[in-house]
Length: 68
Length: 237
Image (cartoon, rainbow over all chains, first blue to last red; front, side, top):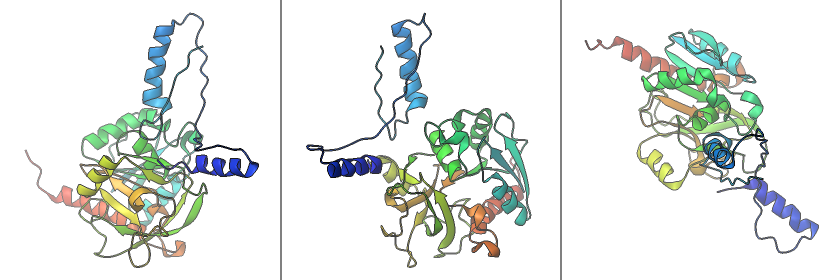
């Protein structure tokens, strides 16, 4: 789909002389702090649900979850 | 006619809608987003603005407001709901309309008059528009580029759900007439049952000569006409 922000950043990168860029996609980074006693499996399940229902819109966005 | 105008934190066109409804001789009442009942209106307007500061995505948080349960129920019961600008974004996020609104293709906020071609005059939102009449209505948005996948677009097209499209003075759907990059020049759509509609342009700001256009009246008049027709029909027992 059309990503005008990514395209604009890509053009600007070209102007700075940054080589070898084929495409740029601009997105969001959301940091969520979990309560200390939350299990990993439980956390992942809750986050999957939150990402799918609320934090991302599946029509226009993809998401990945990284648990640390 | 009684319009319920939904107010979210940072809605800023609620009073435009109240004013437009009253100019047309109707009653309008604001309903706060924390309310759980609509107080039995004839139709619901979700106004423009920046609900919840457009945080996360436009309309993403408003969708979870308590009042949206009542709006959803009202729509499920066949009530007429129209979302204008941010209201359109909210209806898409809530899943009451298909697709999504994303950043304008030129990344700019557009505040200007546009021309709209009416794609289907056989709906509660367009039935009072004379055949062939183009509507001059203002837009004011940064995220009004309509996006949906190809099957959804085909379904909207086949079902007569594309109600308003950006066009030039000849009624042609040119790229130049498209202010934001919307697919198929879509400015507004309705749901399959044709009782929920959303559009980025502001009919509420085009109801008086002093504002430069009265074409917005045709949309509100269509809703009023539909409701009055339904009232006139004998009720099934």
